[in-house]
Image 1: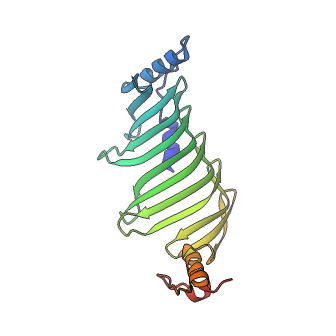
Image 2: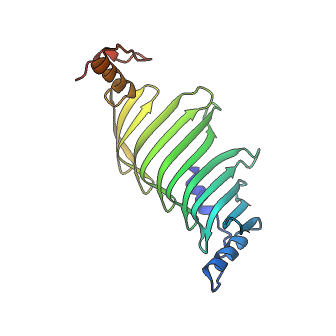
Length: 221
């Protein structure tokens, strides 16, 4: 993901001020982070806006320390050509890296020129996905969407993911970040659970919006 590359250059201009007081050091560090970096005393937060070597505009608003962004913060990345918002992160930081719980969203065009919006919500460690994550991706034009749930270890997928794709729900296993197998699961479909409860407890007959085996799913006991 581009965000991991972005993190490498986010606050390269930071100058770590050496002062007697931690707060004074934090304030000085914020002010020296870039030419468009400001400390806001009323809210005790720092804003830092700058252009990367590739031309993107990055703006950070949030907590700060003598080692850069810390605590809760919001990061915005803007396209170098038209100024459109491409990436956002809202969550915890430590030493200017994603660290803790946060939500990362990126926008990009696929090979057909359609806008894709991808969102990851979960736990981060030193800038990498680490722990349980929910990932949602939607095509803005076709409205087709994809969702998955699973764990990461230092940015690498691990163990079993459950993915809800346009063609069905699947269990996908990973080892060292590499996909091992992918099997469709009827039991993990939301519609299956709904159909079973409606059939067993309320005597209602339900049908799926697609050509899934609703009759079989509703009769599972």
